[in-house]
Length: 119
Figure (cartoon, rainbow, N blue to C red):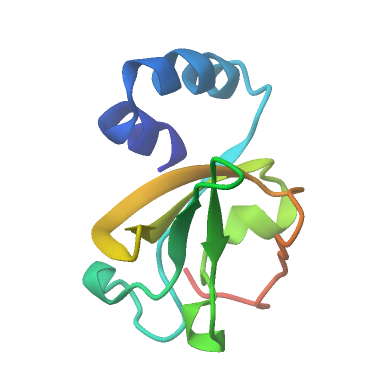
């Protein structure tokens, strides 16, 4: 899902940067959309990406336990990067769902294993 997400939703610049790395397995990616509190109801996402004009960066925040990303199994074990889906907030306005490529070793990123899964 990592490569198809970038191919389908990434800009030309993002595709040129990330796809060769993923194809050569220089990075290992996964896809994080599902949240604990809403399952796969994309419009119900609680995780936000808020633009901070002071730093010229986006701050990704899962404010509640129910906004924890759930089921990206590879993330906790082997992935180095993730396409994480959030609500894009700029100047207090919600622009809907957008994906962000996040390196899992960034400050504030916590990963773990939810235990045994079926299937």
